[in-house]
Length: 205
Image 1 (cartoon, helix red, strand yellow):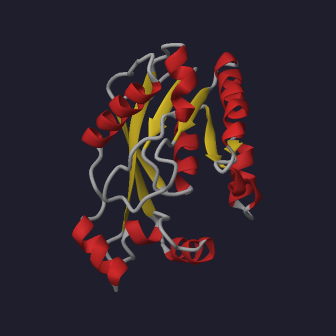
Image 2 (cartoon, rainbow, N blue to C red):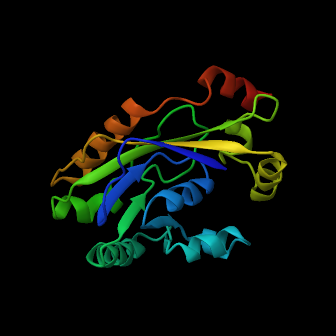
């Protein structure tokens, strides 16, 4: 993976939100930032990827248990107190790269309560012209199994990751308003990787 960045990354400690396309996002951002991540709990037990995620200080959340959110918020606050950055993927699920899904506001609660500035970034991928398109080989979405995705990813000779950091941070003492403002900022900056019409035709076939 070759990583290309645009814009100035935030200085730690920081909150940063991004669109989410794949578990590969963690590798790309970890290479650019001193940070910890918020990720789905079952990722911790995956061969290879789970070890990598734990190694970069990922905070795992059980999204099926609402009572797990206070623990996660506490660990996020601890990371900020230690001068680290916290990277969130508030869509809550990785996507195909045709659009930015709505942001879930719950994990933005500590930033809203403290009126803390939240930075934003977008990520996308591109493969070589003669290889499988990135939205199928790098992005991990819908019903694609991990084994199938890993097989397609490892077939690639190389691919590029593009990270664009936003020009400013956003504040709000209301988590829903904060989530909406951040979604608008990310969506305005995001360049779709695949047309939705093509995506629908692939899915239908």
